[in-house]
Image 1 (cartoon, rainbow, N blue to C red):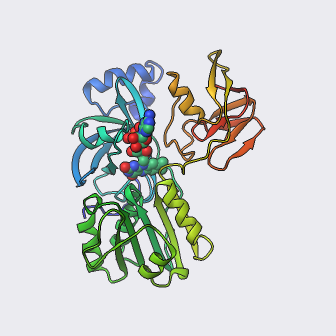
Image 2 (cartoon, rainbow, N blue to C red):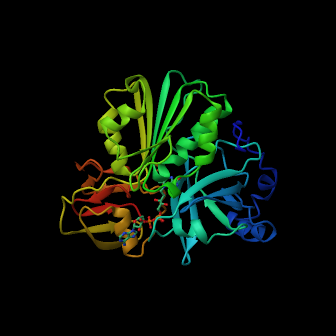
Image 3 (cartoon, rainbow, N blue to C red):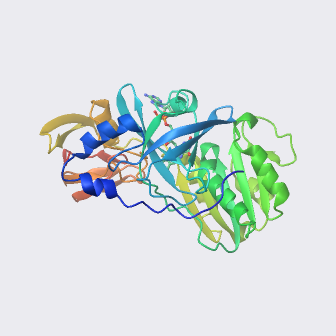
Amino acid sequence: MNARVRPSRPRRPAGVRRWLKPFVAPDVFDFWASRVNRLWSWERPLAQLVERRPESRDAVTLLLRPNRHWSGFKPGQHLNLGIEVDGARVTRSYSLSQPPREDGLLAVTVKAMPGGKVSPRLFDTVEVGDIFELGPAFGDMTLPRAPRGAWLFLAAGSGITPLMAMVRALAADGMPVPLTLVYWSRHRDEFCFVEELRALAARHPAFQLRLVLTGEAAADADESEGRISDALLSGLVDGLGERQVMACGPGGFVEAAQALLANRVQGFQAEAFTLPAAPVVDEGEVALTLSRSGRTLMVSRGQPILAALEAQGIKPASGCRMGLCNTCACGQSSGSVRHLPSGALVHEPSQALKLCIHGAATDLSIDL
Ligand SMILES: Cc1cc2nc3c(=O)[nH]c(=O)nc-3n(C[C@H](O)[C@H](O)[C@H](O)COP(=O)(O)OP(=O)(O)OC[C@H]3O[C@@H](n4cnc5c(N)ncnc54)[C@H](O)[C@@H]3O)c2cc1C
């Protein structure tokens, strides 16, 4: 492991910017500055890909050098990464898979989703030297400054990434608390970081690793089989009721973990990378008015407003598509919306409607 925990880098004073401010527009500065150094920008956090490391059959770790506008992160947090796809800027969220490093590089580990827009490109098309746009780090699933008690991390698929950053941070501190990581994957060759995790388990008696397969038979001593269930967890984890739990993975996995554990452990925090499948409760179309541009579109009721806009060629700024990062939030002056994860109807106007997790329930006017 080459990551060491260190405090976030302080931001350097913007001396040149202060001097140039009266004379140059930020866009013009960016245009010319990027011809000298592709990481230079007036105020936009950018990062350059400096290394690609294969991590499993379908995942890669990208090491990125951020410019000075990047303001740091805590292990367990995510960032939004913007790349150009077919001439348009597309953003997705990725967790930092290593804690802050001495050399300031950022590590994200991306699992290629077949048919996805961004992850297959990050997995096999982007090249060392490519530039990405970054959003600020976000996410509350982080460790306390001085963790106490016994911990349990539950990871499924790419949900290992924020938990891996925290495992690495705890290992760098000498593993001060008992920690069990249960990590699910369909196939063995889809597990990431396995060699390192096994080495950490051998080095730190307080750290226990359980690998769980759902698509093939267990073979090694630290492997088991089966989907998340009461029986499986009770067999794999000592003192379940005494644990602080963090769970991360697809929406369905996180929901199942929460249903099994939330009321019987010391603490339960979770982050889902996808929304659980929501039943369609609204049908038909409604008129969506974009008050700034003066356009009105017909959109399907109950479809996320962000997806409905994108389907009609309108691309508002967006990030996690999960209601976490607030990038797509915009004002809503009239109409009712449905909060899709809970199914709740909301009738009041909002100054910050999250377009990615709300569907239009009636005719609606938003501040776009
Ligand atoms: C907070 C957070 C942190 C995350 N961290 C990580 C991480 O560390 N590592 C990681 O790998 N991922 C992470 N993700 C997931 C990541 O943001 C992306 O969702 C993921 O990479 C897929 O993006 P994509 O553009 O490739 O797929 P998308 O284009 O968004 O598609 C998603 C899925 O839908 C399917 N799909 C797309 N279009 C259609 C269609 N028309 N019909 C049917 N199916 C379709 C695709 O096949 C794909 O499987 C995180 C997500 C969140 C919210």
